[in-house]
Length: 252
Image (cartoon, rainbow, N blue to C red; front, side, top):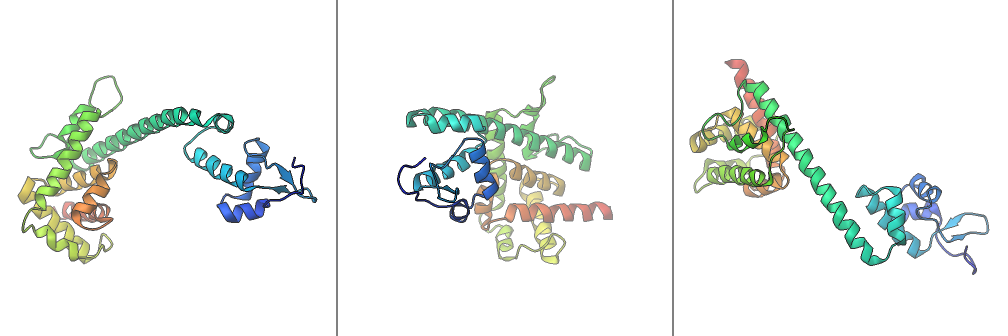
């Protein structure tokens, strides 16, 4: 406890400053993660500026999925130890992201087959042909890094080719991101599908599949949004093209 006159901020004040809820601050105290060094004359915990900086650090560590014991050890460790621990945790998180992407891609493969009755990659020109690397007997679906990079290049190349000089897709950039069923959104979807039929020989279902793959792969949505000229375009087009495909399927 502090030997001088208690000075600091109360739990309520710290909540307002940091945005960390009171219940979380109390949890940190109960678990001996961050215990303020002072109490007021009334018995309230008082946080120093140094305590508040440590609180922000602890909050970030919890976002990085460190356990309470690991956080306590880190706070007590020399600064040089942090680099080693963070490098290891970044590696773990990257692995989890890769596994999550593999599951998302697997789900899209299954969804495509359910919608069309065909396995993707069988038709000429389908960007998903790289996904054949998924199917290794006796092992869960896993896309090797080289195949993942190649798939990203395929997807980007397909969209970049469609956006060539005097591409009709240029006119889509001026249209608003309307709800999928809106007339403008369906006009975008029809124009996009016609363009990819002409440029890459893709059916509407294959265009939808390519858009959904882009949403699964880290960084691809942002990259294609930049290419297409507006944030949220890939997600908007995927929803619009799905509605377009559903409508086309009903009329056949």
